[in-house]
Image 1: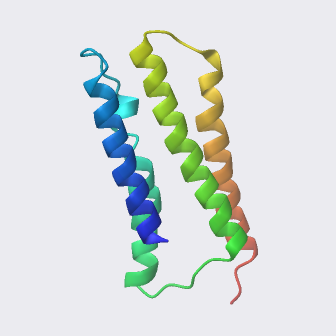
Image 2 (image 1 turned 90 degrees about the vertical axis):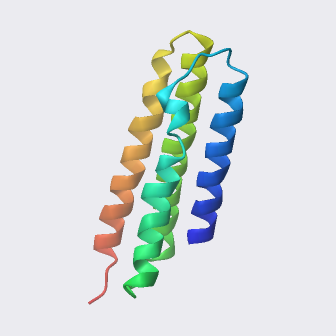
Amino acid sequence: MAFGYLAAAIFMALFGGIYEIFSHRVYSYYMIYAFGFPLVMGLLPALAIVIFDLRIPEDNTIRLWNYGVATLTIGSAMKGVIDIYGTTNRLMIVYPLVGVILIIAAVIHGFITRKA
């Protein structure tokens, strides 16, 4: 699990860097920091589970969390593309909204299915 998040963070950092090389000096913080979602919300919790020997959540909880992190990551990259292109799109609000809903659903599901 931790390796997948690390790979995603490295991929997004490389993708953002390469995309901005060809962006004609137009930059977007959404693109630059898109790697932060899999790094902070994915790798750090996965490492905390391993380091502190915490109980691994149920599979559905992990899936919801992964979907939320992926949605936030892709949404940030898409917002970066839109910003670099120089336009706006009112539908970009969907990515953070759905991502946060999925993360909240994962937390709620984790508490509901937690066994003593």
